[in-house]
Image (cartoon, rainbow, N blue to C red; front, side, top):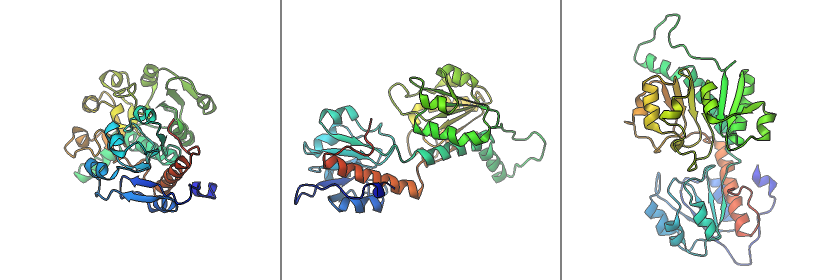
Length: 335
C-alpha cells in the first residue's frame, strides 16, 4: 500500500549509503528489500530474540535504527550508537520503551507504525469481548476436563446487543473498535480520555469521566497509550467501580492494568471476566496466576499479527527511515 504511494525512493548524496541497524532478524523481507536499495544493513542475528548486549555490540556508527524488540532504547543505547545517529523507527504501534525525550534532546528523528495496526487490533478487541463475555474459553476448559453440563442456566454469558461499551482512549484503534461494534446493536458507547473528541460525536459515543464509564459499562476496553498517567490505571480501586457482570478487555499495554489486583478481582468475582492481548511481562510465565484462571482469556500479543499488516508495518518503517535520512517528513512520525 505505502510503497505504491511513494513511486520513488528518496535520493541520497552521491556514493552515500547510510548504515541501518535492524534490531531483530525476524524483520519482514519486504522492508529489508526497500532499505537495501539505498542503505547497508546491519542485522542483529540473535534468535528468537536478540539480547541487549548483541544489539549494543552492533549499533556503533549506524545512521538509523529499526527498533523491533521490547528492550529499552535509552541513553545507554544512544551513547553506544554515537552522535551520527539520525533516525530511529520502531516496528510497532507503541513506543513506550523508547526514551523519546532523550532522543529528541539529541536531535534524532523518531517514527513508528501506528497507522498500520488499527484494523487488526480492533478485530482482536471484538474477539476478546466475545470470548470473555460469552465465556467461550471457560466452556472449552470444561470440555477438556469432561465437565460439560447440559442444563438451562449453565455458563451463561451476556449479550453485546443492548450493552454499554466503554472505550478508554478513543484514538484510531478505539474508533475502529466502535465502527466494528456498530453492527452488534450496542445500546450505548461511552469513552474517556483527556478531552472530548469530534470523532466521538461522529461515532455516537458520549464522553464521560473514567468513574462513570466504569460504573455504567458492561464491557470496558483499554486502547490508550501507556504513559505515567495511565500506568496501573486499572487497579483494585477502579476494578471495584465496575459492574460484577462486566468484562475487561485490554489491547493496549500490559502495565495499564495492575495484574495482582486483576487476579484478585477475577477470583473474588468482582468482575465477570477479562480478555487480554497484552500483559506484563511479555512473555507471561506459564505459572502466573492469571494463566490459571478460567475467567481470564489471554492471547500472546497477537493484535497486529496478520501477514498483510506486518508487511505493511515493515514498509512504513523502511520508508520512514529513508524519508528521515533524506531530510524529508516521515510518513508516520511519533507525535
